[in-house]
Length: 131
Image (cartoon, rainbow, N blue to C red; front, side):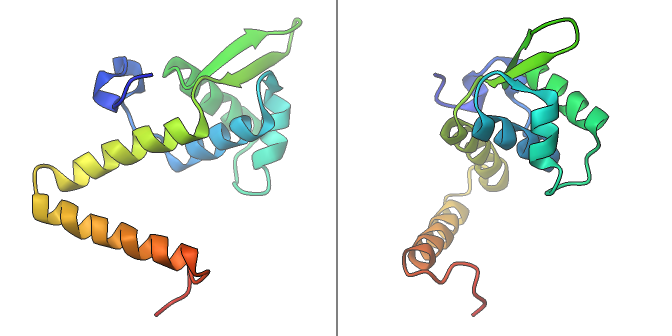
């Protein structure tokens, strides 16, 4: 698998929107061969997406090669993630970090410090608590 977004085919370089993330995460949780209606039910409680919008997002993800789609019967589509959850996070976080930091080494060091703080908070169970 490619190490960075810049080495991916151009169709996958664009960052995912929050709604695309919701749909893609649902499909990863549900596994290969998931129907549009199953994905819709999975995201229904978390978003205000309607069934048609979920279908649009799935097609967009397939166009960008995050998803594969196969026809199963005359009216059913089966969706399968083309990347693992870890790879999705890695690719998008690397691109976001590159956009935020650019070539600023000091800013990168600051981000490392923030990540170290978050890691410590998660380790001691205080993540999400306000200081």
